[in-house]
Structures are given as C-alpha cells and as structure tokens.
Image (tube, rainbow, N blue to C red; front, side, top):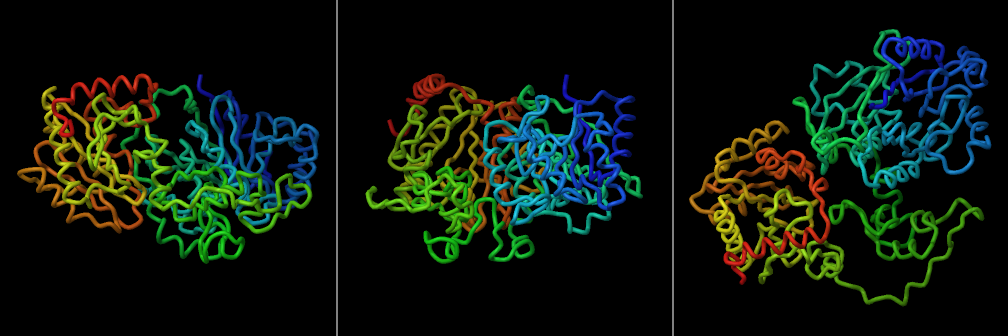
Length: 595
C-alpha cells in the first residue's frame, strides 16, 4: 500500500489547532504515516510559547510522526540548540533530529527515505551565516551532491517558494497575493530545476496554490508544486493537504513518465537570463549552483572575473559540461583530489581552524603532464570523441573519414543509430563540403537499409549550447506510419508551447541547405528530417532550454512504446549492446558507404 502523508503550511506555533485538525482528518480519512510541515514552525509571538512548549517538553503528545523545516520563530534558537546537544542526535543524521516524542527537526539539508519515499529538504531561509532558521550555500551544495545519486526524488520540501513558479501557469489559478515575491527564492528555483522532484512542497507565502504539473529539462517525469497556507489563517485557505503517492522505486517506467493533459513547460527556464539583474549583484555568492566565490577575489587560480565551478572542483565532472558558464579549473580539482581543504581552494581561507582535517598548504603540481590543447582535453573527456578513453567502442558500427555511426546507450529501438562527427564539432550544420558529402552518403545508406526492412528513416538533432559534440539521431519507423509524423510532431510541440516551422523539399540536400541558413549559432535549433522530404524546425529563443528528449519522446509515442521515451529506462548489459551492434553491422554492410 502506498504511504499516506499529510502536508502542512506554516504552523506558527499553533500546535493545538494543527494537531486537532490532524486527528479529525485521521479519523475520517486516515490513518496517516507522517505529517511534514513547511514554513515557520515556531510561534511568531510570545503569547503562543506556552502552548508550543507543552509539546516540546512532553506535557502534550504529538499524535503522529511530525517533521518540520521552518526552524525559526520565538525561542527557536534556544530549543534547537538544546536539541542539537541530545545524545540521540549526535552524528550525521539526515532523517530528523529528535525534539520530542514524534517531533523531528529537519536541519540544514538532506535526503532520506520515509516509508519508501525518497525525501529531500532545504530548511530555513537564505543566509550566509547558516545559523538557526537560515540555510547556507553549503547546505545547498550538499543537497545537490545528494540529489546526484541515482533515482528520482519523490518529495522536495523547502520553506520558500521558488521564484518564477507561476511562469507558464494558468493565470486563473494563481492566487492574487502571489504577486508579492518577498517570499520567493531564486536559489530554490535553481535547486528544484536540478533535483527534479515529483512533488515540491513549500510554505511561507501564506496562500494555497496547486500548480499544474510541469515538464523537467532532460527528464521524462513531471513535477507538481504545492504551496500551503498558514495554520489558522483568517481567509480559511487550505493549510493541510493529504497525499498518497506511490514511491518511485516501485513504479513502472510508463507510470513514472505519465503526463497529465494540463502539463506545462518548466516555469524556471523562462527566467534564466532576465532574472540575473534582479536576483543578484555581480558579487553575490549565490550566482549559480555551480560556483560560490569570485576567483579573482577569493583565490589565486584563474583569471580576473572567472568563477570556479563548485561541482567540477569537488568531483572532477559537471553535468552542464561545456555549457557551464563557470571555470572547470583542472589545477583546483587536482588540489582537491590531493586532500587540500576545499574552503582554502575556493575561498582562499579556511574558517574551521584546527578542527579541519584537510591540508592547508597547496601541493606541488610541478610534476605533471604537459598542458593539453583545449580540443585535446575535450577529446579526452567527451563520450563521443573517438580518441577519448570514455568512448563506447563496442557500439560503433561504421567509421568513415569525417563521421562514424554507433548505437546509442539505451536505444529507442534496435536499429536506432547516431551519426557522429569524428572531430569535436557542436553540430552537423556547419560542415566542410567533404563532411557534408559524407554525411549525405551515410543518411542515404541508412534510408536504404531501413527501407529494405519496411521502415523509413527519421533524422533529428538538437543544436544547442548544451550539446558539446554533435550527434544526428536516426530512428526507423514503419513506412505505414510515416504519414503521421508531421502531425504528431506538430501536436507535441503545440502541447509544450512552441510551434514547428514546416518546409517541404524535393530532395534532402535542399532541406539541409535550408537548415544551414536557418541555423543561428547564438540561439540554437531543433530540427527533424522526415522521409517525404519535409523538414520541421524550431529556432530556440534566447535562454530557452529545449526539452532534450523531445524527438525521442514523440517517436516513442508514435511507436506505442512510451516506457522507452527515457533512454535510462532502456539500459542493457554491455554484452547485449555488443550483440545488437554486431547484428546491425551485418544488416548495414551492403548499404554502408564506407565499406
């Protein structure tokens, strides 16, 4: 049975009223497994302190396991300081510090499992000092690191609403009071965009708001945002909400990927460019989740004005790759790898003093390999560069002079192919004449190969700053269903809030020439080449984050295999991959232009 969870907005110390309502709901619709409170948990006036302390000191009983994140208000520092010193709360605890029987404080940030649900949280409000009731950048970075683990987060709990959550939402559903953005947090927007929880619950705004589900970038599931009102609010807005979600760990891929009809695009991708001037000055340490300190001011590595990518320094990799705006400093990463204090590397000093167990002197890096060129470094790190040690060579099915063909990881169908430039190029629309000629030969070879099996070839590519090494995807579809392609792509685009430009050409070379003219390197482009010569394209708007899996998801719907829309659901063993590649080589041999 799915766990039954109660969610609550700011209690503001009104625990008698809250728990009376919880007991009433439990009798009519319970029992419930847990209550989780977001927003200010402690009283906002001394008059409520006696009532509050009855529960803290055990004179009144908390009726259900209750977790809270809003660790601020009257007497919060005194109570929570004592809580931190309890013997049962020592050590690294992310599933809540015990305040009283059935009452747990979710301190800082963390991730844990609650009745099978993956729960992540960020407590308090933004601050640089990280005292009670305030989260620090370290709390945010820690949560990002935890969220990088495999698996989808079921719940993310924050006190503040994410800035921009009402973007692309139905205006009729937005509460009037939400126009005041005083309780909206840009850090939370960045965090939720990266964590991609199934449910995001927040308080502090004082109103109830259930937003339509929205799509996540580079992920196949949707997120639902729920803002809850304060306990005992005068307008009688909803402050208690019940959910019984099935944990992701036991859901099928098709259940997880289901998208309700009212699903919108991600609300946070609209604000990336325009929000910078509003939410932070140049010296604001929260400029992005990927950096914290101005390198030119805080430490010696890097040139003036550059900012370190926090993730790269910590782990040696960054999910944004070459689209990351901040410095991937190999020297800083090596110092971290050799045990140098991270604060010393990034801030230029360590404030922990003798308690810090890391090194506080930079290590001698003079004995190291000769500096590599930028392209050489890219080739080493890029999955698609043939010279990279990371390349999956067992997936390669053909190699030419300028391109090679390979099966993708987690292919949509067995004969799903990638046409990839051998050189580290960001797209296939700015090629030399020789490269364009070879690409055309590969396309024709794949068309003929698929045609021999009763299929037609669909080509699509996302040209974006987020794509560092081009890959033109090729998927076979039954010839009997090819006529549906223009309509299904156009309908899917309209559902996500954009339109595809449609042009039809007598041959594919003319279509490619058209795309090369349309392509603007500053903006980006998504395009599809259909079997009948039709070209569908969408020029990306400035700061638009296009859904990376769009082409694949549309074809998964056409082929009636929605559970394969996300490549991560289609992973197989290396032995199985190698067999698929060998089988395709045999079928493609007579059509391969490079044989």
